Length: 421
Image 1 (cartoon, rainbow, N blue to C red):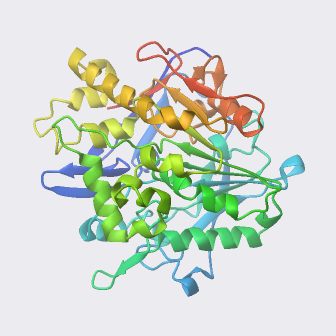
Image 2 (cartoon, rainbow, N blue to C red; image 1 turned 120 degrees about the vertical axis):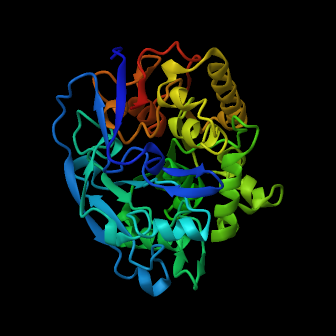
């Protein structure tokens, strides 16, 4: 599993700025962006031919009773999820995976967002492939393949944590209510009998898995084994290339617009402002439930949208570097190395707990649990000869203490780097 694989994102018809999950500033205006790796206009290919079997396609289920509690998407439509039933020894084990897809921080870009699958179930796919951590095949997902696996769709724009509305713009910010309605629905489908449960999520969903981790734990009896996994959700309050704070400004808009502070830990809010408590580096220490952080040290989304967005780099000095790390100058690489150091420093207190887990590889990547090649395959990324899927399972089942931190780039030749063409 040591062959280096380069992942290529081929942008079709529209520019990259319209595809990044989250928000990138364009001039003085901040546009809501859609999925970084899942958008239909992006194809992901590998330099190594794939012989993997076709993934199972899983249908969309709308939560029919959600509207009665106000648990609706931005446009007022019903929220939804995809459930693939467990079997055999996994019949009473449940994995709930929270979809990512950025945020919206102004009325304007929330209105834009509600005309997409990240703001309305009218635009959600009727079926989606389950791969990576959601795969139903033992050779692709050795420890969770036969669990009940759910993907909860993301249509609120605030990591399932807002609770507000704007009547004039006909916007519903009901992420917290969607979360509660989904939990109630899944409990009625058999999750209340779970012997084991794992809450996971990618990107904005990875942030949500941190926010809701203790709520998830408290939904089950003490006898149920419950843990959480955040993939590519450890967003840093970092300084961008212009000396500004692009992501802090974005998060501040999200928190204020959607009244996210209602659902952040009071223990954090007693010490810090709500925007600071929306950052995992300040929130994670308040999570009591065992939590695993899976992150690329040079997270591709953060490099693109937080560190060097167009608003911070109006002349495009970072464009080549952002597209392909091999094009970065020595000073740009040093800037990215400093970002990695900040990540590791922000994880120090978190990693000191015996119940937490870490897999921080020095790759230019994003959402490694959702892609089969990065989750578990013949050439998966490795730390200590261990692929991500095995590291997460070793930690979940208490087989090993997992605190895996990579050496700095370019030492890791197992990465699946993302390259933008």
